[in-house]
Amino acid sequence: MAYLLQHLIHLVFPNLCIVCNENLVGGEESVCFSCLSKLPYTNFHLQQANEVEKRFWGKLPVEHATSLYHYQKATAGQHLLHALKYKGETQVGVLLGRQLGINLSQSSFYQDIDLIVPVPLHPKKYRKRGYNQSECICEGIAEVLQVAVDATHLVRLIENPTQTRKGVYERWENTKGIFGLTDTAAFAGKHILLVDDVLTTGSTLEACAQTILEADCARISVVTLALA
Image 1 (cartoon, rainbow, N blue to C red):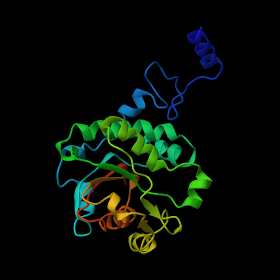
Image 2: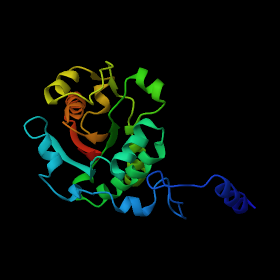
Image 3: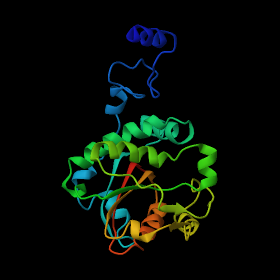
Image 4: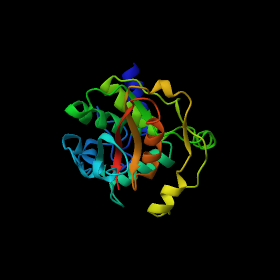
């Protein structure tokens, strides 16, 4: 009976891929396998000294860093990020987070992660949006790695203006002093996996990581869904 009811609901309200609008089939969630397969995956989780790690050279002592796919305009990857960040499609973050988690589980570089930490939103922005897209990604990663998510001890102290139209130096200036730790002991001696949706200049991630490294003997690895 439940199956028939679900089938009837899908006939009236079809379950469609948010990228191509085709009907989803069994096992597909929000995005069809065809669209997922077309994402330009980086495979950087298997490579040391990859392009993501190089973004932080000379700025931040990261253990390892990777992104799931390359960001390209007018593609499925851009559509998915936009749906996650601005259209409330939180399940996209969880889904892609699982994919990222599978990659990390297959890499020897991320086997000793102690905590997964999202880049935080300012409370005012969180209330307006209703969720933190980076937390959604963390949820998917945590399902695969079976590592706890800590979304409470790294906080955003200042609601800085949007970074979208800013240059490299402006982005760096825009992130100075905006993050803080509520308890440095929470991250002391731990290998922290810092998570965000997209890596552009890296200024926000750098500011977050520098704050986390105020904890004694903390170590940082960085992952994002997309690399711009």
